[in-house]
Image (cartoon, helix red, strand yellow):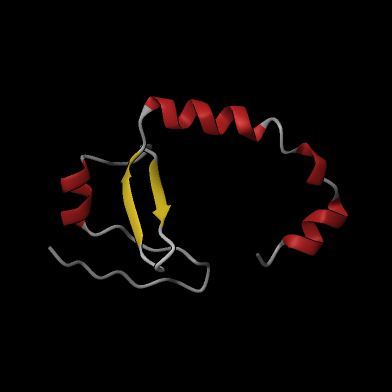
Amino acid sequence: MFSLAKITSKSQATIPREVREALHVGAGDFIVWELSNDGSACVRKAQALDRDCLRALEGTLTEWSSAADEEAYRGL
């Protein structure tokens, strides 16, 4: 299957209907992007373990939470 989506000026894209249906995702669901060394990416529906792991990590990343850090890293 081949689907095409355009990235907006705000770096957003709409997930094509065929892809949403194949992944069984909808509004409020989470997806995971897996990046490969060859420059390709794979997307899949996030499982509960994925969300729990990311939430746990989120609490450990507070060392870069100042306004200066936000300004310095905003464009990344």
